[in-house]
Image (cartoon, rainbow, N blue to C red):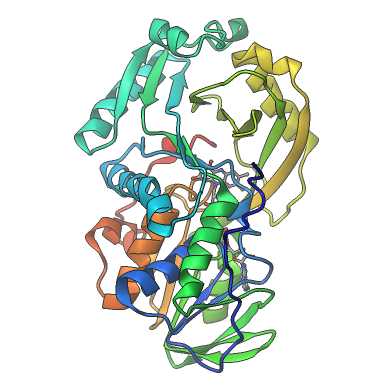
Length: 402
Ligand SMILES: Cc1cc2nc3c(=O)[nH]c(=O)nc-3n(C[C@H](O)[C@H](O)[C@H](O)COP(=O)(O)OP(=O)(O)OC[C@H]3O[C@@H](n4cnc5c(N)ncnc54)[C@H](O)[C@@H]3O)c2cc1C
């Protein structure tokens, strides 16, 4: 098996045309999934996806691939559960292996207040369609015997929840599957093409300037994650987005199977095992906003210290690699999807540290919005104007990275 190479995938690269119906800026999961669903669900194929690097070179190819729907507010449980269901069907739908593996996710707590919140989350998740159950400390010990329930004497595990449908999938393969499906139907995916400006006629979009020339179009969608504000600046739109780096690391392989995914929201730390047996870990985002892709010793130190405290066996492994992505964070830790005050300009952003799991639903719903001009019910709460209307969707506790 080599999960890095997919011999079956046929990527048919397009040539830039002078005009398209829709131009999507950003060849990550969200941009490509939107193009895929525009083509497959709505027959809209006169579409270009502009990618300044190579597809998946942004956060979609840098994340720790956790897929789950155990969110803390009803709107998000519904949305992420739909995405989780689409992920479950994606291999059949695209006839491509995305290495989707359902392993469950354990969400631990170390304080009385934390376990009270977790009990409520489990009930609310079940009411809105996500399979999450509260677990006692004893039950956690049975589920994952490797956990030090005393948390090194400092962070005792008091309880938590188990979300049975928590899963992982190979990130590159998700990107390739959507790209291939869109390209096969006529979408042009243009790598090494940077959007440098957006042309307006009054308040209406008329096209995109690129480093390879102008493209005329009536609809532009930005799906550029941590670069969102550099795009929205082009149309004079101020966004409630801050860009923060997020880091991850992977160890050499652990010779035993380690399931499920284990997370502590209070410590802001999580770990899962890759298909090759490596232990993949993430923690909180860097406090200092920046566009830096630099990995830090500080992250290495704090992430491994937390990991070893909860799972002492990890001390025997070696860190092989460490890397960074830059994330688009909103004040309420929920995404922004939909129209903007600029006619013909849409955004799919605010995916922060949690948007890989949202790729299928985000793409599907944005495609419907572009095709019909009507906001689908599932994403109506995530509109940009919610901040002005005081309808924020505060759910920072579900990110697991702050
Ligand atoms: C270390 C890390 C771990 C994570 N772990 C998880 C996880 O376990 N689960 C989860 O659900 N989420 C996770 N995430 C978050 C997730 O990766 C992102 O939310 C998601 O990938 C965003 O997808 P996207 O398509 O919006 O952005 P991206 O994949 O970043 O794609 C945006 C693309 O836009 C391109 N671009 C930018 N500017 C321009 C321009 N001017 N012209 C043309 N192209 C441009 C970029 O090159 C980039 O490829 C993690 C993120 C990181 C960094």
